[in-house]
Image 1 (cartoon, rainbow, N blue to C red):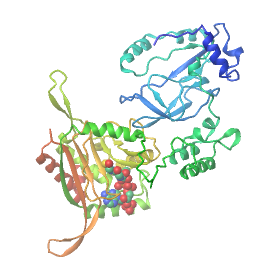
Image 2: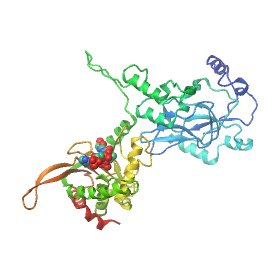
Image 3: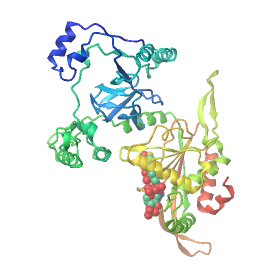
Image 4: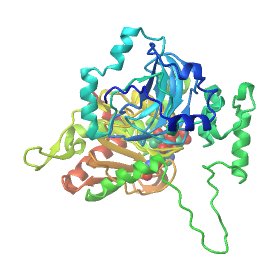
Length: 477
Ligand code: CAO
């Protein structure tokens, strides 16, 4: 985007400026200085955070107008379809304007905040900064079509603010709340900007958040996010609510999955062996935790078993694509086993990915799983954590359900759904009734490229490793 230097100030702007009574915010002596000093208000653009993400919701601001920031200071937290990300400042300076309120959708490539970098740079550097570099120019051009982050222009400080862009200053509470308070607002799903802080300088305290949530839940809150839906009304009342970010992402992903012809293959797996092994290992881990792990769930063993089976059936780790020249469908095989794990999180279904599972042992898988679970629970999974999966495992059994029919996601050809482990009576080899632990494994596969026999054979390999987990040792690399 080309340099924008605003030197004219129309009477329309002046009238709008006066009517907004913002002279305290922008004292005339500073705002209307007509000389070209080394002053610069730099619009800081929301950068392209990848994965084709075009907009993000502003979850919270860590700064307010007139706050001083250093390079790398946190500006705000944004939530995309996939993850929440903290945006840090590229410049030191004074915040002049927040372009969005918390809760609004910020567009990638559009200004997020204006920062006055006056005095932070030498005059000659400012000149360099105000001229787009060759790289920036070309980026801006490339981005024109794609709507991703263009170059940040520099706006002369002696330009008065455009009336349309002036927003009232935010309350101090947004910048002053502690991380613990911010975490609580997330947990209770309240917008910190709606809360009147009772602490020093309007600081929002934990009590304020609890009070606010209590009031909201009792129906007394003016919050836009109040989710009390009418019930038991004499006539039918329909209430429209927008999809959450996670639902919107699920909507997109699952709609794409509809183009994949699925088939389901399910079987019962005897969990007695893996239960025994797990109990033995957990006794040892309880006494001396390793890699920060003091207890293993079943999942790390299953994830490892899937990875070991993928060596024999690499086709299940592939994706379907089309040849660029002919458009003919092809299979793209992948060298790493990046296993997505479906997680039920406070914001809904997320599928973080355990990368390169073949290089990990059961304990490291457990440690990675636990790291991802903790991040998922606090809404802090990064785009990196959530991308790059080559096959998925979905364990719904810890919640319930004997069977599950999982849905294959785009760029993968198979998914394993795990049902609830049940204790059932069974016959042993001597026809004696014994207690067994049973779990249903349900595989869904892309029937365009995976046939039933291949799926059944691969599933048999996984069954072998889960029923006789010691045998996995021979295949560990
Ligand atoms: N059947 C019965 N119990 C199970 C089980 C199963 N299939 N899987 C796990 N459990 C048990 C564990 O053994 C543990 O109990 P103990 O501590 O007494 O041993 C307990 O459930 C909790 O396990 P966990 O959830 O902490 O650990 P996990 O590694 O098995 O699972 C995770 C982690 C993140 C996958 C899981 O918590 C989760 O979110 N599952 C839901 C996934 C989902 O929503 N899938 C649907 C996708 S399609 O919409």
